[in-house]
Length: 373
Ligand code: SF4
Image (cartoon, rainbow, N blue to C red):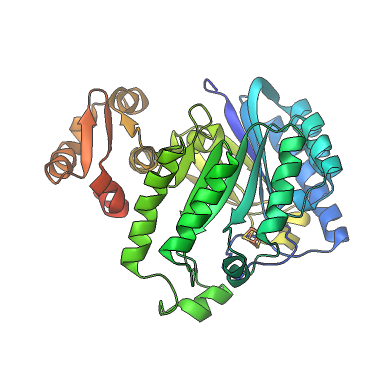
């Protein structure tokens, strides 16, 4: 992807709000969608005028559930992006889709529009767990969607699954892992459920009762890696697994400090010096007040991010990359921390790279905290 930038487009609409979800998303009338897409186009046009470098190596439609809106709307947005930016020939173009929300016609439009990667939100192969999560689909319905996606010719597919779901056992989680791996997607994202404040789940589970205990949760994490490995998937980031060559370019871009423009409500952007966030208020966004704030990042902010984001990846950070980015040796900044974490077996230094050890991955947040100024 060389040093081209990335584009994220947020589509905040869903069929129903899931009980654990704290994303900026919700159920909306068609006329709100109409107004939203109008504002989205205006934002893309306006902001593209001042974009200093128009090259784009990946586009990602996230949400929400981008696949519930008319496919023509997605195509319109992509057509506009093509006019206003320079999309590279080998760009990764992803759309998130939920089971039941795509048809073969929709998928055909996506293909024609240039989308080449589909990310499907499954979460579990167990219907009782899907029900607990407040998902609106069954596993059988997911299978139908997966089949449609493959039949439409998509050869780069991600499936999202979730651990630490209330009522989930080690066995049922293993079954989800194996069932999904048997389907042979190119990529699997496996996140642990986080009970976020402000969601129905918070009221139900804030004291932890009903959730898998910490040991089980840890075991689920470890088993994800070992089971998926048996099926040929490599972990390349704390929660992401892929067949060789199918690591998500867009997410890798976030973890390696690439610049990106985020369009839509609540979308974030990074131009290499500052981080801009858009308003989270849908009405405000539709009214044309897109931006909430832009914060200039200091050099220390950027150094911290280089470490936090880079260490998320199994390959870790590059020492020469650090020098290139900040004009100084990593040891001039973090000598004490690197020695201490190495002595405790939490990070590994191998040639040009520094990465989390297995133990360090278990306590990743503690390791990252060591790199804060
Ligand atoms: S489908 Fe995704 S974005 Fe929509 S409510 Fe559920 S978890 Fe949130």
